[in-house]
Image (tube, rainbow, N blue to C red; front, side, top):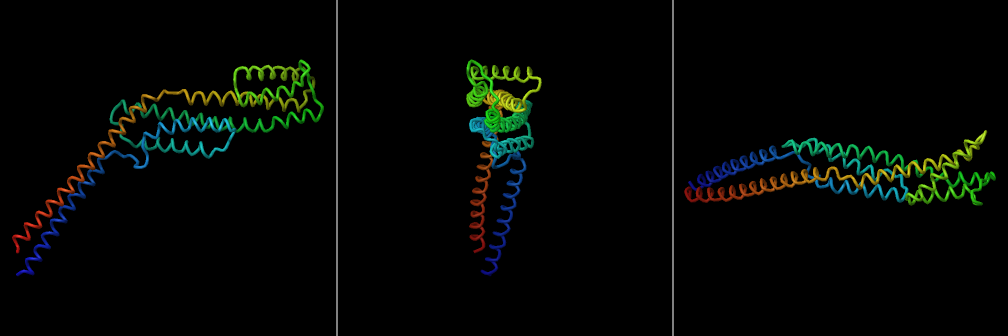
Length: 274
């Protein structure tokens, strides 16, 4: 009789445990199904940091004349990753949907400008690397031109290097004046010297690319067009995290209550069958 009672206790306890486990599993699946589809390891608050990080990286690459694409490409990939996540999220309101759209357009344009930045930086570095050798070829071949009793080509070289490191308005004006004189030297010659043409092309590329790069960096740092949209997205994301945390607390409470109820049922069954 005692053996049979124990068997009944085990059987009923197992049925209760299976019932509670099935109920908890069903609730957990329902909770997961209704949760918004957001990557667990990507937070949209990262958008703010990535945008600033891209700006800082572009300044660093410009100052060091580094055309190594690995770092900035990694950040571009991170931006695209966030854009893909954004496309999977349910847009719960027109305001939220418009914010995502503006942010997406902003980063599409930024990626395009970053690619232009990388291309311009590569051309700038290549031209700077060729500038001194092109001047040395002029000196080697005894090609000289004096302005105010100074070696014009040497002065142009110095002005261009100053401008590439410090693109101030004053330095740019010197380069522009040098370019005009170079253009006159080439145009007034019946047979322009290829060495002068090569030197002039390097000066032209350095001037144009330096200006383009600095305009891009200035736009990167001054563009606050998505500031309000980032606030909207940030608020949305924080609300979603709070909602998931609240659902998690409810689930833990249900688990705790189920265990207490299960133990109470087991105790009552043991008392009745023994």
